[in-house]
Length: 251
Image (cartoon, rainbow, N blue to C red):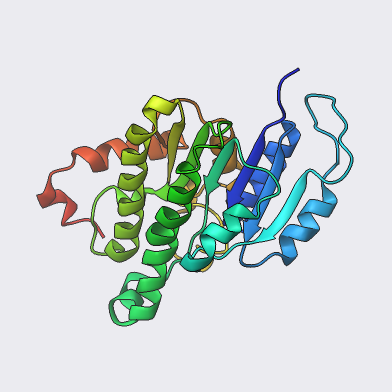
């Protein structure tokens, strides 16, 4: 009998994360959903079935455990990890925060929060997780990044730089964990219809639904960079190859 997977989802209150929770439960996983705000997650946990959808195994109690987690509380990360009811097979880091670039230029507190949420907080908790050599069941780490981090652009380079740093950290972490057969993936997403992008003037034809991104998370394979959506795959390749003189003309 296959072991039931345990998923630790950090920043679980995001729209993508909540969709991922549903998909993981459908696949028979147990989920530890961790976030600063837990009210909506509790409601979601109560609404999901107790049994594992695909395995047919019925387990008493809920499939989702909700815990408080603050990506910015660096001093509390070790205690948070030590208090987990069980150690994870899969870890997903989905914590996010965004302000527009113009505001980030003068609002240091907001810019610093983006840096800490997307990079420093991720490094802090993920380092703790991977340094736990006693957790021999750990098999995968997935980080939610952004195409904004592929090339620096004048419209969003502060937010983009935080995502670029996160992606580079995950790239190095993947190499670091190679000998332990632990897979590291990064989801490099384009525009997503979420509460973070609500009100922004974005092209409708390029906006992806949270459920679409969540499926890419849950179905992640062995490759490092995962870019959901055919159009965004093309945009990703163009951004990687575009000469600097043309990048400077982008918004």
